[in-house]
Image: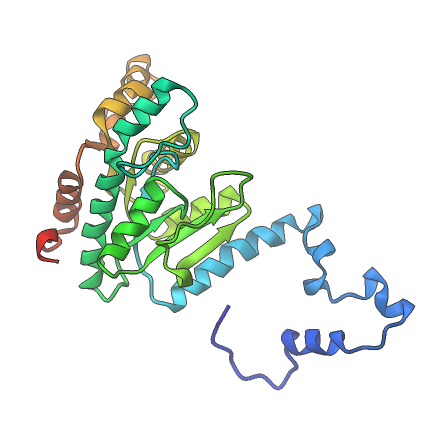
Length: 285
């Protein structure tokens, strides 16, 4: 991580690591107890150091993005399994799932177009505001990063270590590609700078991200921002929040905290009006 260093007369940790590599090989220097604490992998990955790892995983992306002047973001959440139109729906396990994923591939294009709107707006602000951020993986995430790349804009990918599916897509700006161990710190970074959160069709992870955002807004722990749910047909089948209102477990009006949209044009129009942004014409880009 390239960070600005302040002058100090004291030796740095990096210098001491280099010295430690050159010390004589003896039973004492080979002992685990002799390792410098911050370069001792066994110690740093121990259960007792979990709190420190949380802090490190928060600080690295925070300092990195702050130093590069990233002030606000447009977040795209959505399914990793939604294919690009014309591509094989690799995640389908049944004929019905295959048919539905092929139909859902239109959201790949909508996510890509939505990211283009955000990125052209970001360009006018020297890429400090409205920077596209995704989970960095395939599907809708790839479409978001790809939309930014289409207009030569940077985009952020917050990847996470998983046993399957999740690896950085080729469209994430390499300098803005991060990897996480903890879902919790990753979700903090998704929302820390968010001016817009868009939710495309997806699975458990997408639902988790939607409800996390919705809960923070509902409880006043997060400012009211455009929270856009792409795909009325999909979400009307996937969730029934009206039933919660009828049951009295949420307040009347809580379902107004998000807006259902069906196209990137409609969605960006809402964002533009909310923040009084200049109109963008993708055809002129």
